[in-house]
Each structure stands twice: as structure tokens, then as C-alpha cells.
Length: 141
Image 1 (cartoon, one colour):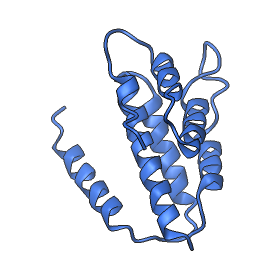
Image 2 (tube, rainbow, N blue to C red):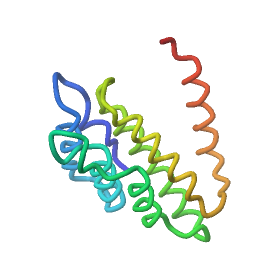
Image 3 (cartoon, rainbow, N blue to C red):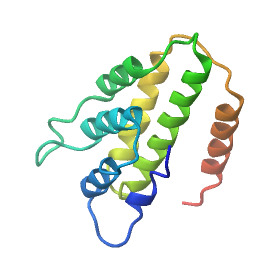
Image 4 (tube, rainbow, N blue to C red):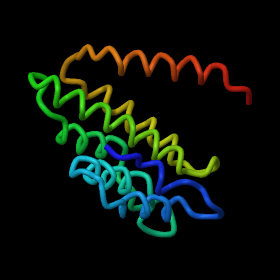
């Protein structure tokens, strides 16, 4: 995957919707990345002036689960998990601090966890998750 953070670098006032649109417009996104971004967009951005019209976190998780390859294809599964994780972080970073998108993303990831079809041991992913968890505990608020 190319560096998806590049199109959403904050160069001034911009809405989260505009940042998502710039991210989706990135020409070198793969099909999986485009599909995941569409799911995130539908779940994180309201389709109207209120929160109505957003896909529920559970529905978003169901769509992501449908995109997930078989547990019997570890290399494809590893690529899927890395792509999902990278895009999740990129999208959350693009959201303003007072936007509900980060909390909704957590709800999507929690819904995915509840839908687990099994366990996969991917050393790098779990190592990264444990580092991020440690860092979040060190954040001064």
C-alpha cells in the first residue's frame, strides 16, 4: 500500500469529509483499500446534516468481515489485517479531535472482534497493537 497519510496531511482548515474524499481520490489505492474506505466513509460520515444515515458499527463490521479472506490463506489474511489496521489509523488521524469518528471506529473494531471466526497468530500485528496500547496509557491528557 502506498502512504495513504499523504493525501490527508493537514494543511489548514478542512473538514473530515473533505479529508476522506482526498484519501479516496488517491490514484494508487488498491481495490481492498477502496472497499475498506467506502465502508469507513459510510459508517463515519453522516449522509445528511445529522448523524442519521450513518451505517451502524455492526453493519460496517459485517461488511469488513465479508471482505476478509479465509483463515486458510495466511499470507492474504496478513495483508488484509495490515491494510485494515493502516487505513483505520489513517482515517482516525484525519478526524478532528471533537468528531465522533474515532469513537465510531473503535466501535467498528470492537464489532469485528465480536465477529471473530478464529484466531490467527501474526507476530508483527500483535506486537504493534501492544506497543500502541502502551503508548495510549502514556498519553498525558
